[in-house]
Image (cartoon, rainbow, N blue to C red; front, side, top):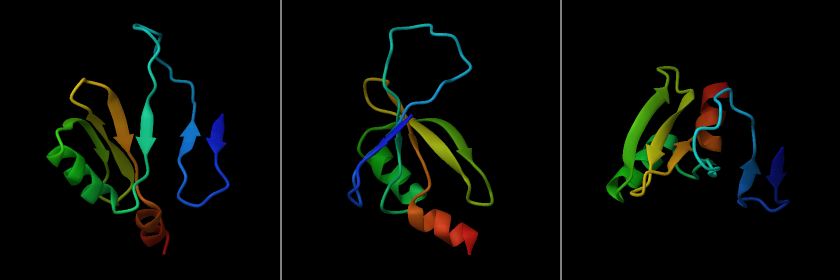
Length: 89
């Protein structure tokens, strides 16, 4: 299920099933698609106190990075629209 606003630049929410069984209370998982490049956003967030959890970035530019906020809540940083367009051109 995806929830998206009709406005450009508005947040889009996607709820998807995962293969893992529930082990803790329900938590929200955010996937961020930045306006800057994915790598610039990762660097910015690390500078603000996020920690690197896992790197799923590929040499061809695809993939994502998993970070955590200071409380340990994990989130993904996806490729930006400009990252995706550059890869498809």
